[in-house]
Image (cartoon, rainbow, N blue to C red; front, side, top):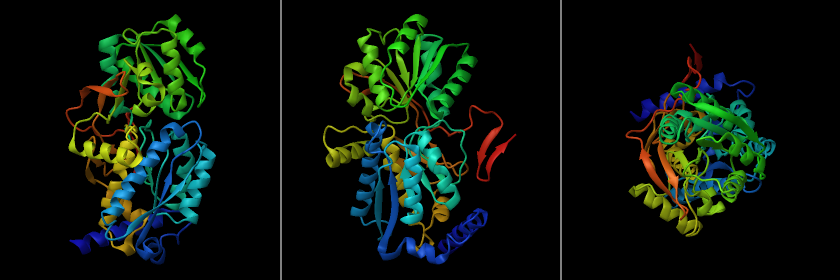
Length: 415
């Protein structure tokens, strides 16, 4: 069986080489040996440590490094150590692309773990597709992407909104105000929100976007006062989340009657804004720090032991952590001479792992993760209370907003 599997993986790697354009030599046998020489496997870690999204991305960096350290301390991968090469793209998409090229071409990393915003993922995608390398992306995102060079471990719209929007509609009312940061993720999430609201008979009273890093929400709050929505559906990110919540509270708005419902507000942002500013508002995500499982207890304890007892875990740091273990499981199947991005990709298809949120699986067709949606309300102590959990893991559908389009192992298929 081992020989058959290795033959299959090598064949898959050869097929990927044939499909790649411009660099037919890149995955030669000698290149594969170079990736595992000296008992080391080099990987890139590409999260912003500075800039507007540094508030969230530094925790993704920490979770990634924690997993790498744990794996190395336990003996590595088949005796080989993972060597992380850390770069700071400073919340700038152009810098993300520059650093990605360095990691893939200059440092010859076999995979790169990185990105929070979709803008940064879109910026690096051409690098990984041109070089047929692998990018491990842990963030919830808008879907509508089908790349064989990205392993998507965060939630897509159907995994966050299919239960959340009907629940908000039923509990608070039909009138939604949509506010997001001005880039692709909030716009696509709001597009899907509109679709679900239309099916329910709901109404979008206004839709507005603010620049990344925006910190002055007085005009937005004035519009909210005038339109009086039942729900403020927020997809603002980074520092803007903190500013928006604080100004909402200072304006005297009441989450009991007009809550913010977010896809992007985690324990990390709550810690930055203070529990009082977050209390009473809602988030939908596959993971919350309070989730009760042995795997999560170990994760939280290890994270705080390594980075400080006051640190929090959240729904993007958790996949940042578990995706390194998925990488480990995939590489464990390979001989040192076979370790390259195409063979790792084939080895991770259908792979399952008991993550802190529950058992997850990489879909063999679209390379997205099967996850466990949850709805929670923020408390004044800085944690969330989970109000509703899915009864089963949910299949990822990155094209849920676009009927007739399906991401398959052969790429995007349009019906």
